[in-house]
Amino acid sequence: MFLYFSAPICEKHSNSWGHPESGERIIRIEQALKDAGLMQHAIIHPFSPATEEDVLRVHHPRTWQTLKDNLPQTGFVKIDEDTGMNPYSLDAALMATGAMLAAIDGVMNNQAKTAFCNIRPPGHHAEIKRPMGFCLINHIAIGAAYALEKYQLQRIAIVDFDVHHGNGTEDFVESEARIGFVSSYQENIFPFASPFSDSDNILKLPLKAHSDGDVFMEAWQEGFAFVRNFKPELILVSAGFDAHRLDPLASLNLTEDDFYRWTQQLVKIADEMCEGKIVSTLEGGYHLDALAASAVAHVEAFLKQ
Image (tube, rainbow, N blue to C red; front, side, top):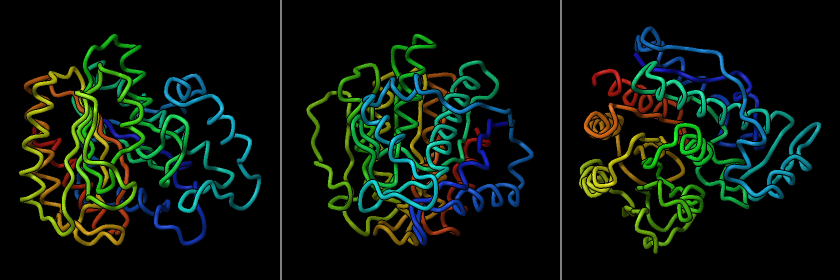
């Protein structure tokens, strides 16, 4: 069994007409999970949106206030070249973060070992003081801060395999030594991350364009060793499936089978380190068929533990 969280409001957020980060993404994932027979293994509970107090565990009050002040009553407003809001956007973002918090509660209270949050907008690019890269608030960072406080955890690992580096998560983790962060990504694309970090609790795994699944898995052997050495009590996953070979926004050559292999290895580590406790939340992935197939592979690997 696995915990599953999603919400209709998350379908209603839109950056702008024709934007690749659309509500259809989570609709297609849920349908694919049903078609694969995986939803019969899902535990689904009602959950509440995150509160302003939750948001402010990570984000600067002025940043959050600016988002609220700029929320349109109709149409769209642009935050930056790539990121926008419509009237539903902040409700969707708060519900997406609420899914993360409820998933953490469920896993920490042993309702299931693993959880998958099929939510949007994504979050891992949102920095403490700046929304960006399709992201308004950083669900995984807020979730980590929540888990540290509520469950008095001392070590949480965040692992991010989105093709774009999780710069927002890095921004938060730099000042929080109780969190270890590993991020693989295609080098020299948005957000144009440096491959280096001054923080011992951050490991970056830049990949060259056109790297395939074997190169990806080889790089992650260092990442998995880092996670083991960190000895986490909980593992959080930024699950961006845009490293798939069909994705239009990047140039890596992974397949859904590679996401299955990666998740299998993470599950083994979680079983060794933290009684299998993993909470995964959707980030990127913009080819709808590839996204849906990859999410199915990810969840299937959870169920084979």
